[in-house]
Length: 167
Image (tube, rainbow, N blue to C red; front, side, top):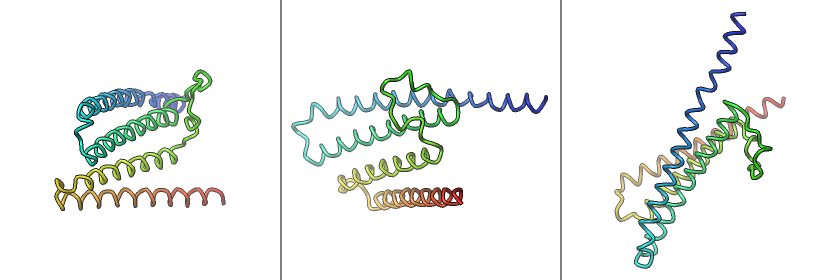
């Protein structure tokens, strides 16, 4: 009886994660505000910006978009994997990937997005190389390489674990 009550309590505790996902929705709204701020900042300057400045502005928008997409992936995948299933029949435009990403897939998507965001930051620094110190550039490259290596190692270990489960 005590064991059953403890298990019910532990199972119900998963709902403590729900406010974390609500907080991520709030952060997604903040990302939208930042995106609007970037557009408002660069739009009046569109005809006076150099090609490099336009590319930097676009890369900033791509960076914000990737980060927002990452937040959405974490919200839905995390909620479905750890809190509760969402009834997809009530949503006509339900994306096909939702509900099919397990924790391993979530980790890989998360790390892939981080690598892409890191690559964009690195590209932005290369586009603005005159204003970036060699030391900062070196650290950006090192950090990006670490993210890439981490992604490859994570994918490799997940592949090994998947192969081991099949045998």
